[in-house]
Image: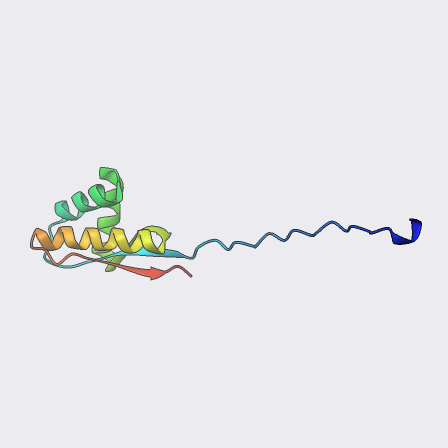
Length: 103
């Protein structure tokens, strides 16, 4: 039986290489109508910011025209931006949050 031996080779297992999801920025846009205190409340409620961090982001948007609130995955960024914008709309303010890919 020496001539009929079967040689078994181990199969090579390939792991699919997973890429990290692309990140998106949630951006707060400044407007001249929404009170600063309300913007801070929205940042605290939706983005779980502290009072101080919320004020800092709000003032950056006020002075520069916009400010990055948070960087996260696309679905979370879009959900948070919509939630914050809807909250402002319900209160009658034109406050806007947008998302864009991080470069």
